[in-house]
Image (cartoon, rainbow, N blue to C red; front, side, top):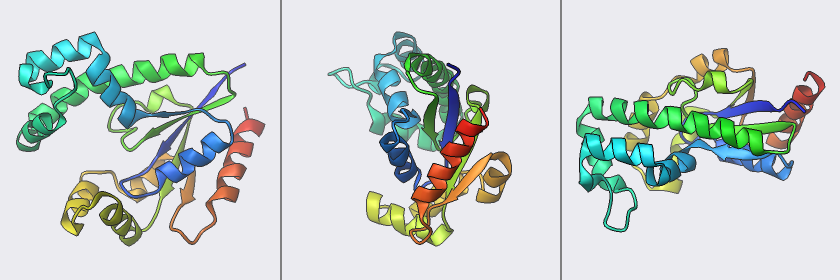
Length: 197
């Protein structure tokens, strides 16, 4: 059985998680790149060694967990640092996703990520589904969920690819603005993927 790998992408506050929960309800396994990257940074020997080599022992707490605040503070002031971390983490996440996909007993698997193209993982998937919403909807979602200020949300948005660019690069798109019914669109997309395998 050939497995179709579907990336579910979208900017901050777009509603990606709503769509991936729907996929899980449809028995489609979902790999969450954010949480898996954190797991790998704590458990992968190669990554741990390279992060310590780059940042020093302070990047891990005494209990062995990643010192996220400490690393974030370094990354915030040094663009080279985030590029270095990404160059280490993204290939590990990609390989982990591919190995995970092989272990799934499903005709479709999904990867949830905000940075598919920026992380050079496009070639790890067969199809791309963009989840998007208008800017104001995204901002209010993130303000309410994360407690960020409007400026903090906009700064993050400014560092992400535009919806127009992502629409151009995606095979499918779902508007998750809170008004448009999402379930029928997602079901139709999954049916279409299955019919065209």
